Length: 286
Ligand code: BEZ
Ligand code: FE
Image 1: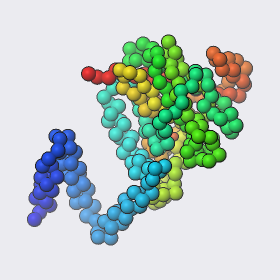
Image 2 (image 1 turned 60 degrees about the vertical axis):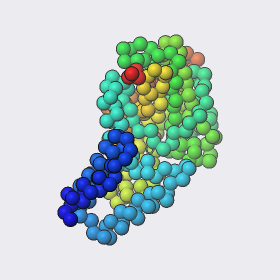
Image 3 (image 1 turned 180 degrees about the vertical axis):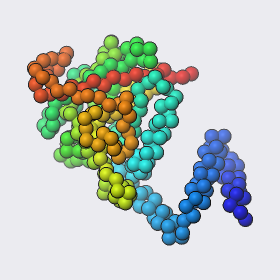
Image 4 (image 1 turned 180 degrees about the horizontal axis):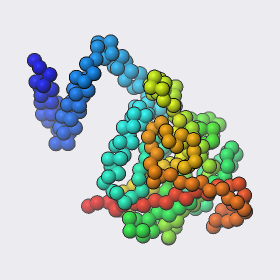
């Protein structure tokens, strides 16, 4: 039996039933997996080490921790999947990785509300922007779902000192497509390293930090939702994001407030920050 015959035998065994898409996926998976194994020609010990590593990734997963997503993220596979899907709506805001810390069911707040618990360490920051379609027309009533880590580098579900749903909120754009909210200026932070993904990063001589960013999911009926992040251009690790989420179009300046002033209902003091995060949504293709 030669290697080529074996591939065809397995592809035939795996692709006899199911949808055309399922057959396409399995045939490609088998061919690439065979290519990989034939390329590296693993010893028995190396193969067992691989199996044990994947087993440990699975064992680290529970309802709060998804180590396989983290593995996909640090290998850049999630970013590749996003890049390929981005090609479908070229004029829309580029996407970035969702990450494992998104939570559904966040409260919708009136425009200008703060998503910080008020006792937060960190510098106050006004985040504002506009949601438009690909022709520049404002989208009223779009939902802007925002979340970020606290300045201690932890999301609320990782940290008992933060109230439930801290630094998360949903906002609805006004008639002109504008939204604004108060938060704290984000800081770079480490992704979890106490599991098999951390072991892998150490082995590869890589760090586990992400540059300062704010996450968004922006949606409106009739438009493709955008899952993305805006990054502080000046942040440490901006050129070496451990999950490859940074894209030039998602870099923004956080601007320091020079003197006391107002933005609609939000009073700004000297030393606060402002960040403008605009979004362009593409229509759903029919
Ligand atoms: C995040 O930005 O929340 C994140 C993304 C990927 C892996 C870990 C964290
Ligand atoms: Fe994050």
